[in-house]
Image (cartoon, rainbow, N blue to C red; front, side, top):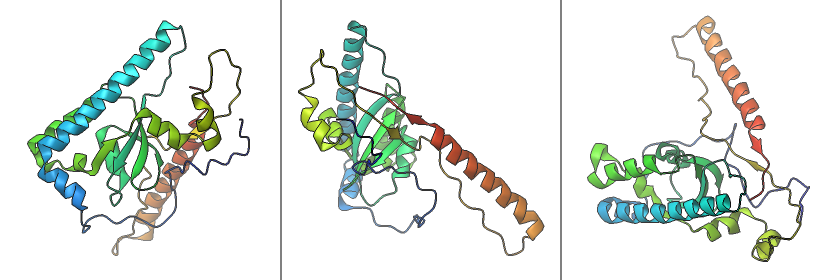
Length: 227
């Protein structure tokens, strides 16, 4: 089942260092997002309930692994989210999530080191109370079950055999995972009309240094693992 081709086309990664910029403002929220904003208590309670269910699931998994003297899985809690497909996914970082992969139809694979979902719950409380005009949780439509997440991150061949794997079987699987973490690419500096070249060039040079540092960090933060 090992895949040494390096082709993970079934899992598109979100880091883009060059490309068409996404423009903010002036967009029209989807009808579902508007509905969620108009039903803040109901939608907020639903997201809280689903996050609590997934939190219990991962706590039970960690306890089960500890009971079998298996190594602890580092890297936080992985989740499959369904969000408004028309919005910029960067809003998820403000809810405490690390963006792992952007899929189709508004589905996003994320991870969080906040194992109690404290940031998400704080934002949900603000959303329900309409404090500070908090609206970003309205753009989260649902939290997928663990089986949904596995189906999207595993190749079809591996997923078909996943439930057939026994504890006493020796299986070698090559796994490669890469993501941009919580680091965002700084915007390219714009030269003001009245700005001299001598003043602009050092700013551009600092941006180039930040960009190179980000690329280097992203290359280094590749993880190999097995769950």
